[in-house]
Image 1 (cartoon, rainbow, N blue to C red):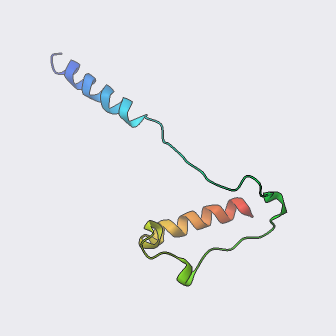
Image 2 (tube, helix red, strand yellow):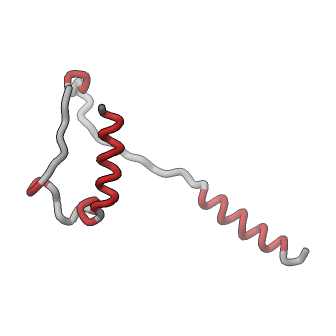
Image 3 (cartoon, rainbow, N blue to C red):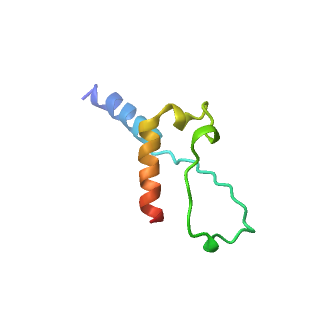
Length: 73
């Protein structure tokens, strides 16, 4: 029983930390009417910054592109 209380205390702290909220920030031009857009394309070649984190992780980039493509279809 003596070991249970410290264990539960540590567990609850870890659990509470894991439940912290994620901050999401977006930025776009509010004056643009996006309903007029009917197509899109992904940047390729020289347009992609080689220091970009997604450029360094092609597997993650592929998964994100696939997800976005499914939503925008």
